[in-house]
Amino acid sequence: MSDVKNVVIIGSGPAGHTAAIYAARADLSPFMYEGYMMGGSAGGQLTTTTDVENYPGFPEGIDGPELMQLFRKQAERFGTGMVQEDVVEVDFSKRPFRIKSDATEVLANSVIICTGATAKRMGVPNEEKMWNNGMSACAVCDGALPMFRNQPLMVIGGGDTAVEEGTFLTKFGSKVYMVHRRDELRASKIMQERAFKNEKLEIVWDTVFEDAVGQDYVTGAKIKNVKTNEIKELEVAGIFYAIGHTPNTSVFKGQIDLNETGYIILKPGTQETNVEGVFAAGDVHDYKYRQAVTAAGTGCAAALEAERWLAEKGLI
Ligand code: NDP
Image 1 (cartoon, helix red, strand yellow):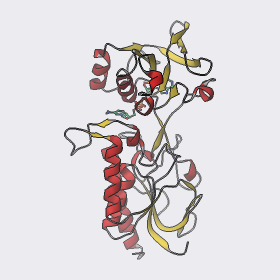
Image 2 (cartoon, rainbow, N blue to C red):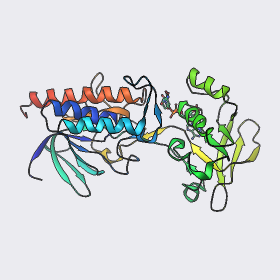
Image 3 (cartoon, rainbow, N blue to C red):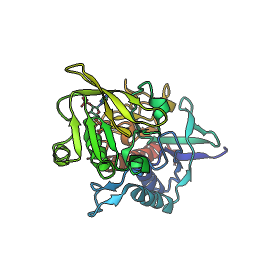
Image 4 (cartoon, helix red, strand yellow):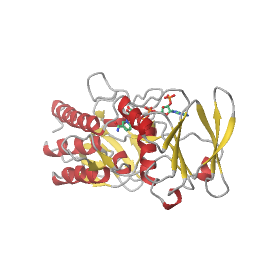
């Protein structure tokens, strides 16, 4: 733990790797905690996606995990040091900053936080028991499993993710119910049209999910119509949450300013947190756009800001 790193990057999604590419090309020898389990997996949320059709430069689309491998390769090519470990503790109260995983501890003059966000759960009574036994928060990761083939399935939510995941599930399930708590979707118009056109997708309006039904595996879902209060059981073999995300910031609580939902607060127009020398990029602060390309853009901006800050302070 003797040397002090110029830049430590925490997280390895599009924001983290782009920050690494820029910091490495600026000769800052960045060191990256790729993460392991905390945010789902190293490489971020794109590793749980299939086709990415909106990342510029890939006119035919690209597989999410493959795109993240390319990001990683590029960061590695310019000399980013990487460990596949979760950060479990940080101390930003003294300089150099201290960052700790279970196996490693490093000191850093600057830090770029790119830990992303994780899919939300609802916490229904049978959730723990049924998790991975028919319940999941990632249709794209789990939908193709044999247990869901040719079975009726259910996705919960009314946003773009719900439509995307619901549509994806129609490839495998006999039918997919999309259970939404209101009478209108939050999803973008183009996604809505996709949902309405899909004959295997049935939207169940004004309805909330109450619990999973089944002994060892999901066999049904208890749902309630919020307008009529009617409760019924839908026969389904799979229940997939698509109800939004929580930022992966628990390890930074008390160290930097977070908003009421846990997202990192940045100084307007910058990637700076309230602690000088600590920057953030990607979904960990951005609850508005949440796109791979915007995460990459802010990763670039954070690295440029870190470089300028280090130079101003005479640290490089
Ligand atoms: P959103 O926050 O947009 O939508 C979440 C949905 O879940 C809403 O319909 C919400 O209902 C519902 N919901 C939230 N909490 C609960 C709950 N406790 N019980 C029942 N329903 C609940 O999240 P998404 O993940 O869908 O999207 C996030 C961002 O990512 C958006 O900006 C989206 O556009 C983008 N995205 C883009 C994609 C694409 O372009 N291909 C694909 C996926 C996401 P209500 O509407 O009533 O609030």
